[in-house]
Picture 1 (cartoon, rainbow, N blue to C red):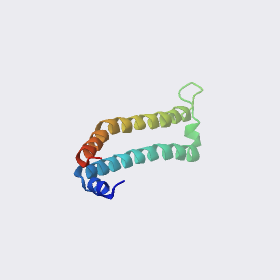
Picture 2 (cartoon, rainbow, N blue to C red):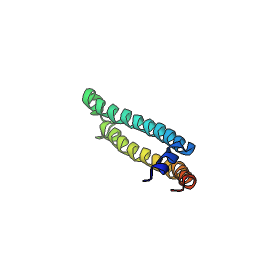
Picture 3 (tube, one colour):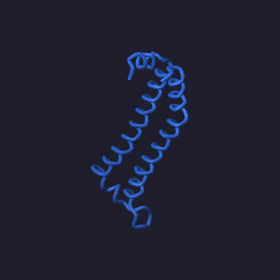
Picture 4 (cartoon, rainbow, N blue to C red):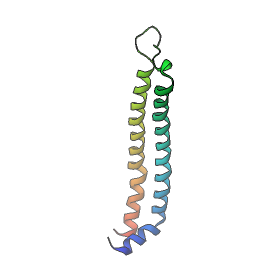
Length: 102
């Protein structure tokens, strides 16, 4: 890639904005996922009684819906990121390409 184009992209205000908002949002989702995942793991490790407690009179324990929640949460935050990337990040990327001429 031409060094001139690299410098123009780096100096573009849209690029700076894209870097800032994508990084902040990515870290927010990362921390949310870490809290959910490690929270579940810590419950499994240190609160086996709760995780093995049946829900009501059924044979399903609390561990099953909480494990499913972790999986569903992962899919949901992935969808949230993709939706935002397709709307906001792609617009900024297109604006950068148009301005820089790459």
